[in-house]
Length: 438
Image 1 (tube, rainbow, N blue to C red):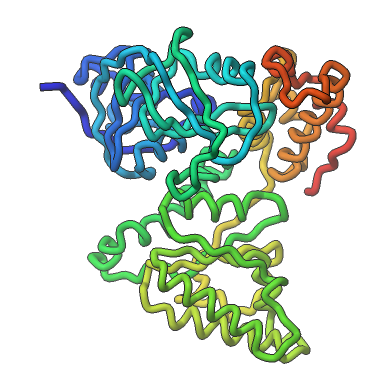
Image 2: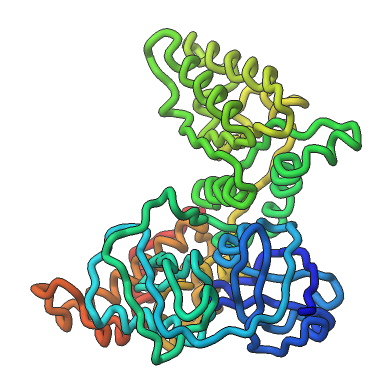
């Protein structure tokens, strides 16, 4: 009988994302007979494999397993779910076939680049793996493995990458996970309590005799991560996600704006559990005493009626985002509508460092890049500003390398990709072009 433990899934810390590792406490490691660096099988709705690492001191004895969004997706589990974990005896892969999720062009050199990145890592048939290319994360799906469904890749593995992309319907890939959001720990915790719990466990609210929230309002300056947070909670909870933009809903034609709102709510109820995300909600629900147009008054009234009419309590949740909460019609902020509010603030130095860590995760950083220094130099930068800074630094690095690249060739040699690094100087140049929003 193989020893196994049942552990609760929590999100990975930023430094562990993309490394194919899970963290377990000493007691769990002993029980399954695993040591640091051993392979473990994680059994959720499907099985996947990862490398076991020791838990952080503060996690000892909590009965948790830390894993990133890619491993969670591969095991088909969410944060808070329970998984079975046991030691896995893997054989080295003789052959592995990968397929992209979107069309890409590559040569033999690129296959070697991918293999070097995956060497020593465990994979399971059907898994998604992430390959960093400059600032992008290239997603590849493991189509087949030999000699077994679960293997680890070595220097001798014969790796094939299909040119034909795998159909999106065949594979579910989380585009945004909680680990893609730097900082905002308190907001993440609150939004999970308010949204994930009622979506996944409505019986808890029924047992307590309380109504789950219908609406949550995220407010804060532009670029602080309101939209990203809404996408992450939809992804992590497995909810149907509908995003609409306030100004785009508004139409000068009589009744059209209200009809579009009704369609959105109908789609959400038909596909429950659902999350409706309304960005710039102040554009469609301004204070009625301050608006002169009849359209705005009708749209506010329609939105109130739709929210009051939500029948599947907890199964359809509306998230509104605004930079100006004081501009919203007060009727929207009453109990039973947007009765929960979460402030999303401009990040402090610690938050900026965490956001920089997220955006440089797939970047080949030179040794002279110090994220603590960059966090100190970027006072007043929002998450969007820091993302723009990292993009600009990457483009600066690319411009430096252009003379070394033969643009006539269809594919770029692997050694050029290997030598492409983003340096401190690239970030200093980017800082001249990107201004803080806050």
